[in-house]
Amino acid sequence: MIILTVRDCKMREVIKTYIIVIIIAGMAVALSLFTFIPPCIFYGIIGIPCPACGLTRAFLQLFQFNIQGAFHYHPLFFLVPFIPLLMHEKIPLRIKTISSITLIILFFVAYIVRMILFFPHTAPMNINEDAILIQLIYLLRS
View 1: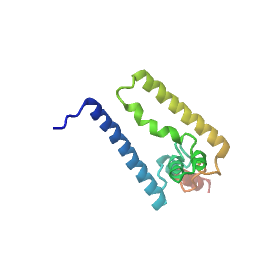
View 2: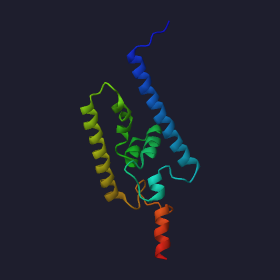
View 3: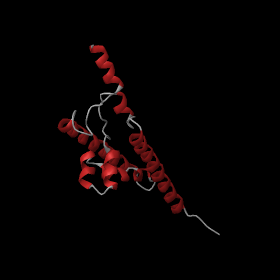
View 4: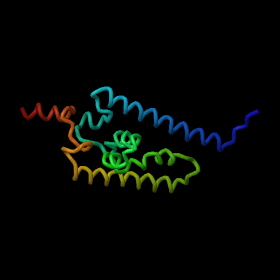
């Protein structure tokens, strides 16, 4: 007879969360590798990179054991696996809130610095000439 404890159930929830994240990431990788559609809706519509831009490529570099390349594509890629842990019930709400706000601030500071240093010509912070908004701007100018 198998008896599941509360701890086992919580661990299953954490594992389920990671599996969902891995499936979504895998779909994003497949979408970007096998089609010409950018996996980021923000980048595809507006034409400028979002704060998470480069994370997929950073993890692809990490899986190829290219740590320097991973940091080039997104310097905060190593924080992403900790995000689902913030959903765990045993973590006090105050710590969850402080951690979430800190992560958001870190991502936006990194985004601003990356936009200043690399936009619009260096990947992953390059402009998407095929984006809907960019095409509308070109259309209105002509």
